[in-house]
Length: 312
Ligand code: SF4
Image (cartoon, rainbow, N blue to C red; front, side, top):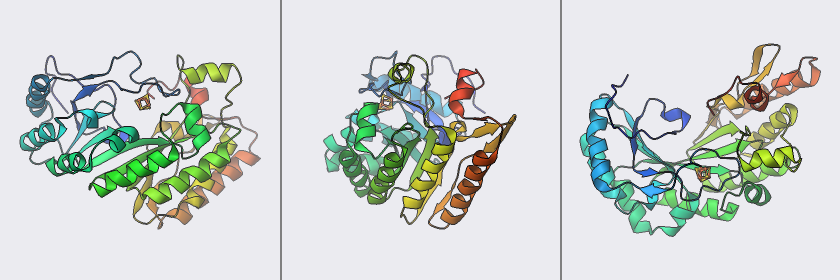
């Protein structure tokens, strides 16, 4: 556990698998900030933190996270910081025992950056980038207002890999809605097959109040993928994945399904291709249950509306 240090600038968000990581903030907010499902940084104006503030935070971080094995850099798009390599070097010197340093990355930013910049940052010690692919389907990406096409996502992922980064891609299950779950599944797998990421992480679209997506839902423009179709979507997605040496994680509570007061599905997780058969069997069992039960099956959207899910 960490100690509280006054004035430390904690990043407000981090990926679920970085729960044990030391958190150090390099930028604040998101320079894009337009994705229709996202509520993360809406109230923040994007800014690069000044070097002195960052270095002060690195010193404080050492006191807060004494045994940090991994470090996550906030906020959403640190590759825009021209001094990132120098900052990462300083973090490496301050935390010599840390196994990895990771950060979120936006495809458009990776594409804009010169390969030399990326390799310098990588060599300085930033190991892994978390990308929000969300979907590999062009229509879905446009509907989400993601600001990048599937081709750009593919190109950015491959460029980051070429620069030596491990890459982790988020896919939003349910992003295609009831109308487009098949295209979303097939095209997301297709893009990922071409990127060959180290990790794929699933989370389920849970539409939050105050987001443009909520308005679309209220107006009937977007219909949430019901639990049965969502399971079929994940099954189709896993079937279509053709990857070696990739780990698929469902490390978020939004992936669960509930019925009769209990959890009936927790998501699928495992190595590809080794655990693919088992994951597909898990999905088939869950589909069979949902198709045959008289119980109401609830997803993260219903639990959010009922006030049982708050940390999204
Ligand atoms: S999903 Fe990522 S890129 Fe999109 S607005 Fe949110 S933080 Fe920015």
